[in-house]
Image 1: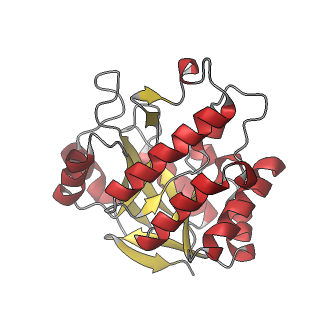
Image 2: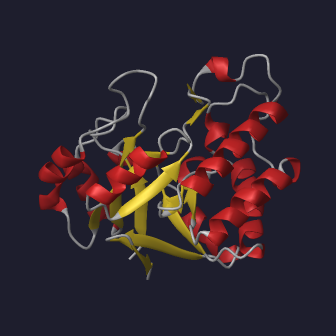
Image 3: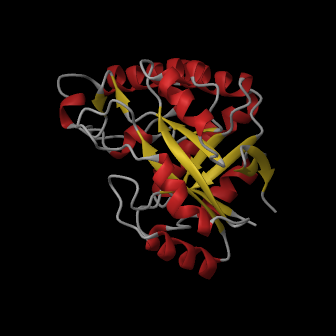
Length: 256
């Protein structure tokens, strides 16, 4: 079964989706899903982008089965490594995405993150932060949306081109390979040809440096977005000789 391995329901600050709507949509599409609620410790706004894992499992365990799994999207920060590790070790998550949402404690969403800096400076800082966090968070299952910054960057051309940042991207990819961490193909931007083309080059390079598996996730925050562009992601994986996988009880499973 194909799995959408990245979506957010009401336990995430930025989503109001009901899990029953998510399950219904997945059944309509004949796909599995993994709920991955946001956990960004020390987020600048107190109480945002964190949730109580105990409440999460108490409420959602009744929905858990072979096609509906319970995970987490962990905001990686160099000053939260042990706290993040403790959360993962204390609760029975099926799957852990490691993502970069903040750089130097500033949310990448914010306009002031880009103020007074060139695209080159900002993207290199972002990738450097990603590399440092990936090295310290070797307990994650997959590296989330390597292109996350392109959603919010305040530049005329937001795209992350491999040729422009090859030195930095290579280090991220090689570190993922050494730690046996798959890359996520996040489908949110794949409807744009420029995004799909630039990401294709990154995933091809991932294979060249030894990567073999990818996870696939829509990053849906509402039921209508579940499964969006998954076929494009599967095509990218196939063209790069990468095998789509998902995680159950923290163990890698190949999609069939």
